[in-house]
Image (cartoon, helix red, strand yellow):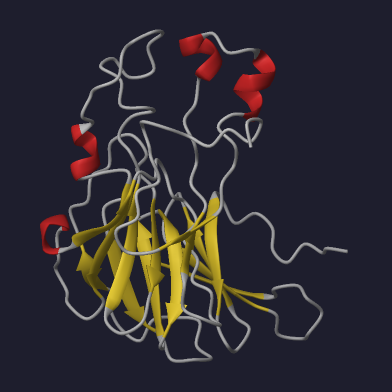
Length: 236
């Protein structure tokens, strides 16, 4: 069964857990909240909030807390066992696009590799976004800077999108990008396109179930098809 660990935190997004068992939660309405269960009852009695800008992606790695506001990635050095940063945040990546699917998420692969998810600016790369029967743009030039995963250095500060490189493409809005700690492989669970019913006359049932929810292993150079195709579980 489940218990409520913490209440009334605001608009919570992703969370990460340290080896000490402390929980850091990204807040959409600003900053990060740190939670600690001080007496072992499963409920967080201790709460500390820091940071100003809201965001989604958050990750504990190598003694640092990585946090992704919509505009980029910042990093705080936090000693293990502490609930507050040892100093000001470092800006690792900045100036990322914020139109459309603006939330950013982060992952750390081996070595110096930082992966950042940058969602699409539109629903399905139509000439008129989300308009009924509006044809798609072909080729979809949006893919040059959006709808995929980008690779940056994990050790450099002040990077912009041009300093990184596209790691994988065709992912409309890859909100979840975990790394399997057993083998270091990267996975993604993107949000598929909307409005198949309103835009293209699909039935209500098809509109509710398509595109299928996907979970995929991602390697460098992969293309998962957005906006040209999507997985239809009904066709197998």
